[in-house]
Amino acid sequence: MPDLIANFGLSDTALGHLTSAVQFGFISGTLAFAVLTIADRFSPSRVFLVSAVCGALFNFCVIWDGNTAGSLLLLRFLTGFSLAGIYPVGMKVAADYFDKGLGKSLGFLVGALVLGTALPHLLKELTEEFPWTYVLIATSSLAVFGGLLMVILVADGPFRRPGKGVDLSAFYRLFGKREFRSAAFGYFGHMWELYAFWAFVPLMLQLFANLHPDASFNISLLTFLIIGAGGVACVLGAYVSQSFGTKRTAFLALLFSGLCCLLAPLMFSIASAWLFITFLIFWGMVVIADSPLFSTMVAMNAPGELKGTALTVVNCIGFSITIVSIQALNMLQQLTDSSGIFTLLALGPILGLVALRRS
Image (cartoon, rainbow, N blue to C red; front, side):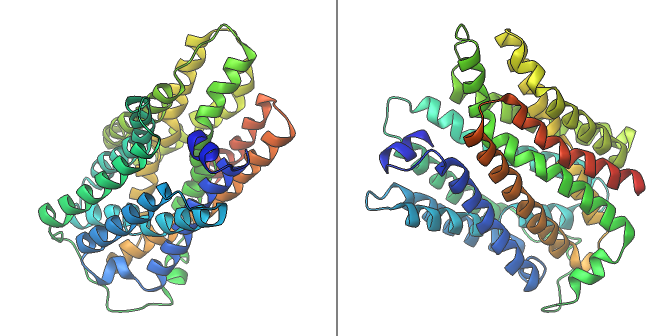
């Protein structure tokens, strides 16, 4: 992102705007997919492939020298729109293959999502001596490869129940069920924190280094480790939930991540780089460990013919919330350099815990 900002002469606020453009594109895409019930009407693997190829193309176009701030925002929006056919559709595929054990399968799937989210930071570290465009070329190539793997190796699941057509009443049918609402609202609280945390991990490391000049960080590598640790946490959380219960495990993960939000200012004040990194790795694990569990509860409390739409609708609303939290942190960052701004992220886990407790 710093290379992108420098290459096109963008302002410092571009981090929040470009990130939010992806989120807004994803929201628009999931809304369109939900209204048209695409994930339930068409083969999920084929939808995945088409979306992956489109997303790769829009992502690749960012390297064009003629881009402006406006065209970059549009390309990031279209990339996000394409992701609507990847993340929720991938969960739909898992739901089509597993009647029982869905939580474990989603744990692996979301764990893969987390590693994919962290991977560009590792690619940046590995290509440090090469032009910044190599990161985008690599991620676009991997997106096409992933789409091809899906359509070649993953047929429609045995538990797939195709939708019959456009169902404009789906939203009301889903949220009319109390158990579904509780799972969805817990997920919304989780999303308030998650993507804002991921977006600002490099800035947290830089802020700590500014406060403690003796600290020397490889920010790209550490960001990969902090975000990537969440992939392991997703798998571990899925196994724990089999013995401890899906809702209870999600509750504890959300509780711990909320506590991390509140403890963040204290950790910035302690002049121990290793302690701070350990804290961020722990935060990176608990901030995402509950995600596959919430998705499991959403899928299991939705009618069989609407599981894909249910996951898509909840993703749409959840990612809408991420724009608010990312922009709020972005605005606060411009007003103050205090680490206290990260306590704002605790609002989501608190409200999510209330929703789960009422369930």
